[in-house]
Amino acid sequence: MSKNSVLVVSGRMMIFRTISVFVLCSAVLSEVTAQEEKIERERGSRFIVEVGDEVPHFSYTTTEGDVVDSDFLRGQVVLIHFAASWCPISTLQRADTQKRLLKRYGDKDFSAVCVTIDEAKDTTLFKEMIRAEGIEYPVVLDTEERVYRQFVTPKGSVTRSVVIGRDGRISYLCDEYNRKKAKEINKAIFRGLKKR
Image (cartoon, rainbow, N blue to C red; front, side, top):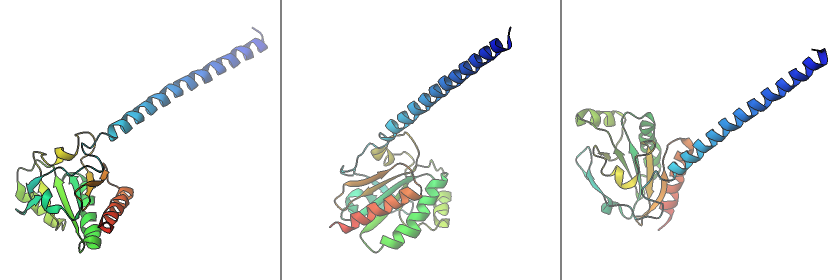
């Protein structure tokens, strides 16, 4: 075999390898794109309710023994955030709600309710955790997920937020919590308080 023949064969092998790598990368990229599209489709269906819907009626007793009833919340802008004690994002949102939102809007027609879906066997420990976090707004221990399931599907994360306008209609939905979403929640509350 001549030197030129070896170069031609080597060049063909290099082209074959390059094409093989390209085909493999395209297949992987196609699979990733399909997975991302599936996640986006599922994201759209994480809530049973939609923006503009009347808030589903719920009535539940808080960890302090007070009754939270959706009918009593009319005329206020309300943030309901769903959480779990074991979730660090939920802990962050409870703290942000207490330190930022209630500090900013607490003297206006604004209320917050945390609905936690823990399966707490010992509510005393749970109450102590909430007190230790400095949470002063109502916390509902929804062990059977009765309130939770009126708003959301079981897909995705526990941490979800719902802002309800003074008219009793849902004005904002969020299925995660981070700094960007915290700003969006703040804006939704601000807009709701501006409306009369």
